[in-house]
Length: 234
Image (cartoon, rainbow, N blue to C red):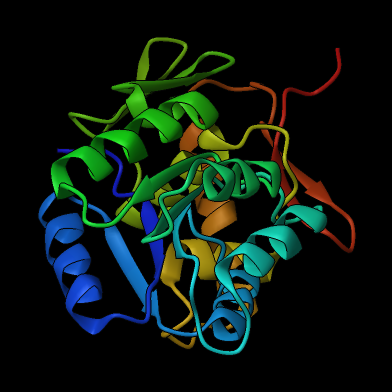
């Protein structure tokens, strides 16, 4: 089982294959989004960035190879892991897919177990946090198996939403996230939550992390941009 519930976007227009992928991926702990349309996949990635994409080559509207090319052109999406899943098994096709930016290439028919193993390998290579049982930043340690957080070796008491926020920050240290991005990542884009709710939970997280007086605030407010996990300059 994967231990961090990464989100995978399946872009596949064969419903039988899509259903098989949804079933097997969910059984292995992935959060699964699906579309059968290349153009729609680009919009979905824009609205809620997945951790990895399974991308069919032959799609309605625009091809999977064009989707891959466009994702690699954008600064926001160029680092998303992409595995091409296609019936095109010629070496020239595989090379073209890799040249366009795919991280791996698997041909149909394929074993779900092999595909999931390749996904894990790509995730471990690109996002090492997915293979870890704990996350560390400064003096903060997050144990992902027990859901316990310590700072300066003292246990930090926090609610589930603050835990999710901190985990998101610790997986992406020093990266600035807007309130909208945090809403999508923590609450999901299917639930309406006001932007100021993010500020409320950020305040709670800051308070929780203050296990001793005068400890530096690790959550930096970036004016007109959002929040980031950073160690203050001494």
